[in-house]
Length: 256
Length: 237
Image (cartoon, rainbow over all chains, first blue to last red; front, side, top):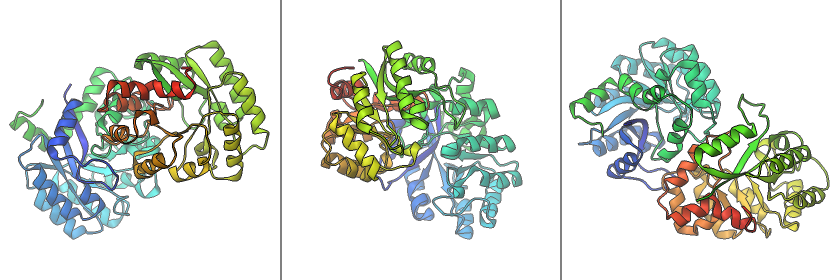
């Protein structure tokens, strides 16, 4: 099994944990069978999104196993629209990341809606952080998903501690997808998610370099999924959704 | 290597549909190669500590792979010492307190009295909470204190707490930052870390994978996965 990790981070955190280089990231991920992934910048989320996108582009140069998300900050709509133009013209940026908690603004505000509409026009998937507080609730994602039915929106952390809300939300709108990494490894949540919306709409993400890949892989491996379901979650769905990434990986024969 | 899980429970869980039966717990242990598990009844966590302790005793007398863990809810006034002494006589191994489910913190007056009673009885204690509050409340105790759910995001506090409190141990379940376990082993030794999963409420494989994949020696891994708990409980595992 060759795993695709659609929720990776590059750059330092404010916790006393090691900041891996891209080479170290690759080495760690490969120990877990993760051969490809899509990365966002920690600097972009915590501080300056433009600086973070730039540092990520520099770090990813020459590496097509690891591709990038453009991070947009919907407090800075015009600048974010420019970031989309700049980076989605690059072959190694294949999706967009939004983080309502980091930027203290839900995704369904007028600014958020404008941002999501622009992402849809670019035709790449959107990874949206969802978690437990009202600001980051999965329910905020519903309006923007309904307004942009052709846009695949992946709810990172599937709502965190509110993962049952994440599943309910995904049941309401067919272009919503779930990604399970978080500090709440509640048993059964993946099985319940698959039963509710189908394995075709769940993607594996580890949150590395913030979390150890063993943590979320453990959820997938012990969730009682069939091998077909597990293959979809760990690889197949990412290949289907991230068409630009699939093309790059096929072109460069990146698999293992 | 004989794996012992320091943090499991059984019973009923009202907050979501989940199978917390002892059979489910045993099946998970078998799937993941866990030999024994310290366990207690969810009744004692959520409703009635004494009745829960009775259920725990009954289960552990029936199934030798389970180690009996007691609990007390400090919101209920009572003679903590009497309940602790009774459970000690019955062979309970340590006490696990649940401030996160009972809406109290370790520095509140009743909680401090309960901790003092556990200390007087020589009974090790596991509890959760912000490291500062737990460490503050446990300072001066002689018994081992295991911080349940010690979280990567509080790592700098945990490091200081381990330096300041020689009787503090960390449950490993949420030390899920990359290389965090190995780093703590290098700084403080493997003997300060105790494997616990929260199963069957939580995926056992998530917490187990963290220890199994950590860049530490096999002896250190064995200590975390069971040796340390056995030592803390006086050689009984």
